Image 1 (tube, helix red, strand yellow):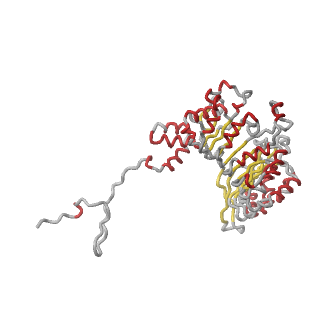
Image 2 (cartoon, helix red, strand yellow):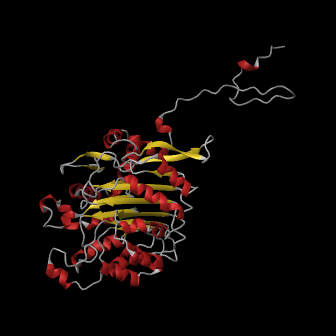
Image 3 (cartoon, one colour):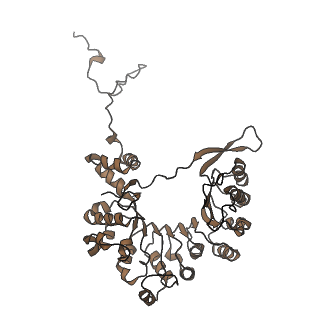
Length: 448
């Protein structure tokens, strides 16, 4: 009879071989195939690429396997708010490569070149002169939009096609850095044309909002007049802002939204001169939503009124979980009279107990004399005072931009001690910084 061949010499499948009875399962070793970075999921590769510099990303584009991912990274978020020349090049790219325009989700762009008197038209490509709005229509997947450099687009009759292109967008976030009301006494430009416009800026803002039913974040910076704000307060309706969750505007504009935005959860108030009248108006108009706001940010002057009434201002939104408060000391105060950040930091700690749901607080200090020795310094006792006032507090960012947290104090009687994590980075992860351009600035990414 032939001799049996040992099992280890047979070409068996590379899987466990079951045995009967009490015999153990035998495992065969499986050779490990060398892995390549390109074997990673596209989502991971995109995250890695997004952290590289613009130059490094461009170098990666020589790889056909990575080119599409690199283009997606370069074009999904573009920030050019102060660079009209590169904004022109970008729009020209969209016309020539509409496939790249489809990648854009976030766009900050400068339209100053639309003003012939402010920008040399010789630098505007002919393709944009003939049909500049066609470039905007290619942005079919745009979700976040910020437009600067043009302040009359929302009401100027000759800008009607421009308005229509923006109204057709389906945005989740919209940022309007400046709007000019032609009815104000300080406007400049073609006075005859502006005098002929008998519209209402508040109504135009409403029309814009009505065209964006998906809008969740809206920012209109300090350029809306009291007249336009009053128009919004009188006419804005719930149906105009059905999805709004976050708002950044002056208190007068914010008050128009408070009674009609039931989903609002984040407020960022621009600087204003607070007084008893403004506080009373805010209390009245925020009554329906005061329990819903979870993030509250605002900038204040250093004047005494705010520090004598800070508790009442904070109590406007008692369920706030994240607070950002910026103290602004302007140039009208001499450096000898400027109080250091420590003074205001302690004042805030003394008034913050009204926010018992608070989990994160950041105090910023803006001064014309940042080089004054010790002007930003605070001590650990002040940090502890925040935690004592708000037991749920998890983090504090002080005026020196240092992040503090708290740990249990097993030796002391207070139960916790502040622990310094470190200084915050000056710039977070965002659009990649690009090379210096011909405008003499280092700006955010714009591929060639």
